[in-house]
Length: 438
Image 1: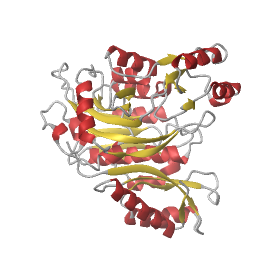
Image 2: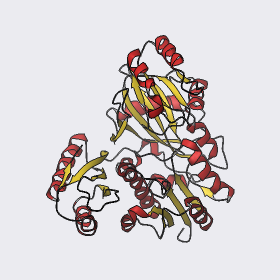
Image 3: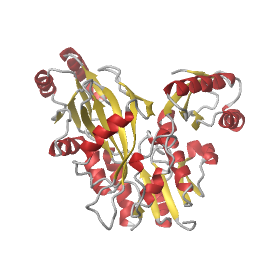
């Protein structure tokens, strides 16, 4: 495999937002997925090509890539992306579903006759649309919250929303029909909140996108990370491997403010029991459209019933923690999907991982350049759990109000051990004048 080239692309850190300002928090999470994925494909002997937004050029030193193309503000990232596709035999794409970004990028790879190791076009189509996914769940006879498209004629239909809220007789959420993760999810408990929200909804909702109204299901917010190693020679045969089940720390703020994804941990308590229940459901579902790595978000209610929310047709943030609790390389399973493998569903996890983003403020005297050249290398040496070192994007290198974002993933025996280790990590950051904000 030493001569095989693979192009690994992560949209946020790889220049997808090269012409606009981008939150440091978003690029921190994206880079963490890129670095982790590159590391695991490198272990398989690939020659790796990737893209990196020039604003985080200094992070290239922490990527085990053989070739890194920098994307500048003036560049057409699609052209650079396509050139890298043409240079490679394989590709692995991590990108948001909204505005057909993931679909279009994958189609470029397919049009150039490349082997796509991430989810293919059919699965992307099914997972991108929340309404199509909702109907898919209904067809497969699994529990899922009632979901409706919100009509739009010059403005979103408030009367429709109020009528459905009254009918459902429970809290509701409003989110983009092609949304990603916890992006732009708004939670409502009363009619007054809904009415107040719609008074200036044009400022909160993107009028170029469609939105859905969904019944709110109260319970644990979980996700299953899955590999479907469908053999190309026997496409009717599915071999679903549940890598892990993860807790997701998503904070629904209120009807005014957006939701926030804060990370999570893996595996969840009572993992084996929950996995067995999930396996029984999944084996009766037609998931043949999803080959490779994908995720399913679901809610576990107090009565232990499972309610499916959506399907993520791509590698998700949870992978950063999952790889720390497995004895095998999940990406090797994807690459060798036509070869027989051990029953990986029966292999036990090795420990526990908590993965989350830290928001920090630097209160020392060093400049941004000194932080990058001196402090960050020391932190990377002292804290092996750092996946993305502290980064802050700003026009001014002397801005003392900058917030830095860092992504970490622990590797310990249990939740308590991870919490203790994170406390020690925060203490090390304090020693280097990075104060924890949240």
